[in-house]
Structure formats: structure tokens, C-alpha cells
Length: 134
Length: 134
Image 1 (tube, rainbow over the protein chains, first blue to last red):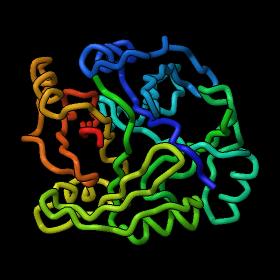
Image 2 (spheres, rainbow over the protein chains, first blue to last red; image 1 turned 180 degrees about the vertical axis):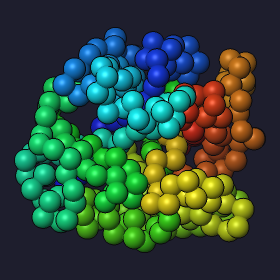
Image 3 (tube, rainbow over the protein chains, first blue to last red; image 1 turned 90 degrees about the vertical axis):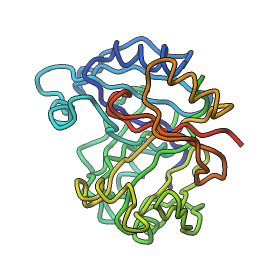
Image 4 (cartoon, each protein chain N blue to C red; image 1 turned 180 degrees about the horizontal axis):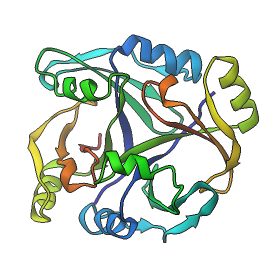
């Protein structure tokens, strides 16, 4: 069912400083400008690598789901892993049939395609995002 | 400097159960058999995806560096992100020149090529592995 590893989500307290780190220290040459995804309560930017991406996410708004994560991990840290799937509704139904808790209904993610998240308690402590491929 | 996102390292308390989850629930079709990498104190297996990999790591031995991580995260969780580099010694020297703490000398990783780790305190709370490409 799961396809490519699309990206790793990294929560950061300051997305501009994080971009400086990936660009100036690690030498990444293809980073996107930060954008706001208000319905998900994040500001995000991608570090595009020859294959794979890091998605930097900073809290946006008082109800951002990342605020608690950063309270526990003030410097930031790995937040989620995103795998691509062919059809998000089929994937959601299959995950539920297999006993997984799916967090909410499909909604548009940072790539402009629908995504859902799986409960980390059912997934070895990892917050897994499933994202419909482009 | 950094090349492809090679894999995401996920620490797990039981690698066989974790493989069952990735195979039977998520539907991954290409997983390797668990192997021991004694010098690094881990048992590991790869979940190979159409692009990217998840590296499952279970503690091996009493001095395993993952034991503490699992004490804090008993169900497991995201442990590190691995980026490829062209030459590990050049990468290490460059990282040190740029003020990063590099943890130890290059050693052979799970892919059979040399790796080093960067201190998470210098890298936005993320444990970053640099791995020399094949």
C-alpha cells in the first residue's frame, strides 16, 4: 500500500533559523520560501534534496498542533514521516479496517493533495502522514 | 553538501513486531531480515520503499545507544535522519569547521559505508546521520 517516502516532518521553533541551518551549515541548495497553511496551524518550508525532502514546520496560530510538541522539545525535533499513497480515501478505509486510528478526515496538505495522519500509539510511536501522490 | 535523504531511523522495542506492522498494516512489500551491527549496538532491518527507506533499529547489547531513547519513548519513535554525502572525511571536516559537534570518528554503518552523527543540540534537536554514498 505505502509508496515512496515523501518527506520527514521536522518541527522547529523558528523556520528562518532552521532554513539558515539547512542552507548554510548542511549546504542544501534548494529550499522553498516559508508559506502558511492556516487550516493545519503551520508555517512550512521544504528542503528539497536530490531525492526526498525535509518539511520544516513552525507553529502558526494559538491552536497549532505543534505547540505541545515544541513545549516538550524546545529545540525542535522529528515530528512525522510522510508516505505517499495512491488514493487517500481507499488508504483511510484500509487503515481503519486494519484497526488503525485515523486522525480526522482527509484534508489538503502542504503539497496541495489530501492527507491523513495515523495515531502514533498504533504505529510504533511514530506520527505517520499518508499523502495522496500528485 | 548533503545529498539524498537516504533513510529515516526509527527506534523500536521489538523489530519483528515492527516489521509485521510495516508489512501487514502499511503494506510494505520489500523488507530486509533483521541483522546485528554489534559495534553500534543495534539490530536493524530496512523497509525499502519505491524511494527512500525506513531503518528499524532495536537495541543490541547492554551498552546500546538506543536504550535510553526507548526508556523515554517506550513504544518507539523517530530516532535519526540520514543524508548521503560524497566523502565522509570531507563532510566531517566541513561540519567541524562550521561549528558542529561531530560524534566520534567515521565508522561502518548498516549500509556498509562509513557514517558519522551530528549532535542534535547543534541541529535543531534532530540527530542527523551523514552516510557516505555507495
